[in-house]
Image 1 (cartoon, rainbow, N blue to C red):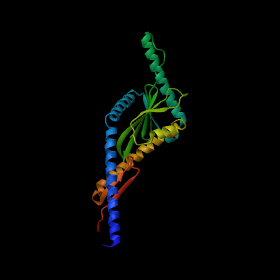
Image 2: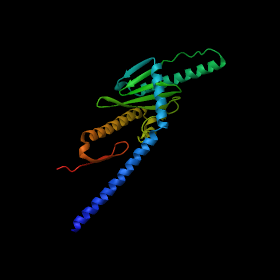
Image 3: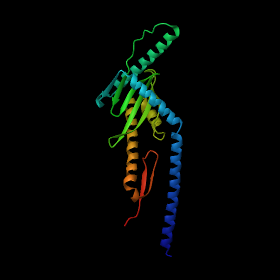
Image 4: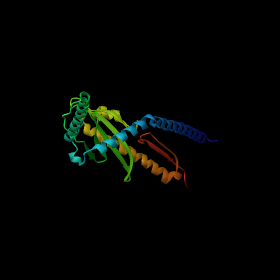
Length: 233
């Protein structure tokens, strides 16, 4: 046997062993993702979904906002409404305790729709953002992000969310939320839609060209995708 043939077979064996190890790692990642998405994450999603639906039912108006109207001034208005609703709830709770009428006027609950996100005024001085994702014009998953905004003197923080754990929401919170809240909210929308686009594109590749693909690997956020084509004559 020629030395080159021996080397080629050794290389093929090493490549197959590497692919086998990678396949095992990806399977373990999928198992881990499934375990992490069970129970607690599903409970959080169901609870927030019900709370957002209740906020939609309690809204007094929904306003569609154009891109040029979505700015720091509007976000400041939303934060003020959230703070007023929170103060009204506290005043009513105190009035009920001491059995005197609450004199704080009713605060309207306005919902704002900007592109594929809807912003709600939630109880407890919180701003709720519902992200809607689409692929090929069809709706996909809904994600939630809840920001706490107790006063203008304190920066907003992310207190709850239903985004996949492998997306960099905490890094974005650290980098953007205190300095550019609009950019933080918009960038989350872009990241979620990009993740859904990549995931659905891989699903279509499997459906349309599955017989031509030998192996297909991808990272959890689908930002690394590798596939091997079968050798057809």
